[in-house]
Image 1 (cartoon, rainbow, N blue to C red):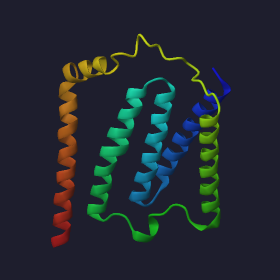
Image 2: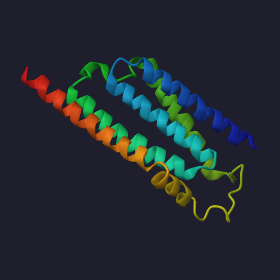
Image 3: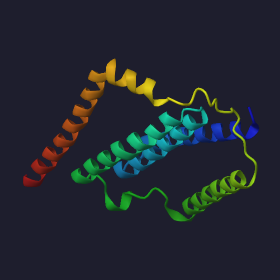
Image 4: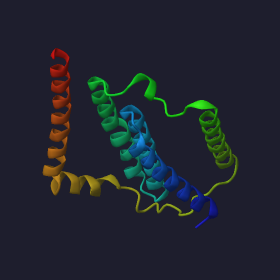
Length: 171
């Protein structure tokens, strides 16, 4: 296992844990949701590093994309966020830290694109032809009821939030 691989694995792990802690400690629900999105992106990076590209892509598309958009829509529909409490980066030191993190990520990107970075584990060409079929087979046969109940539960949650928002507006 290469040193670059280990460094990025621990970096993504640290980002995921720190973002999860920041998610739990935020007062603004909108800022908390943004930290949760950051956690999900870090987890997707870990999945890709563990050679589970499909799971990483689904993590970004489903969780960080669709579910968080619905969550933010409901939060903003209920007007739970306060306008001045949305930003987490305040003051000079917060901006300097954000700029430093951005420069560090840009430097890593430049190193990876200029050098001959090879993956630590070479992909197996014979085993990567049909990666989605086993997951889809289990999901839509053995766990179909749980999959459909989850989708109905999400729909009920959105409808309930709309009903609560309409009821709060009349009172």
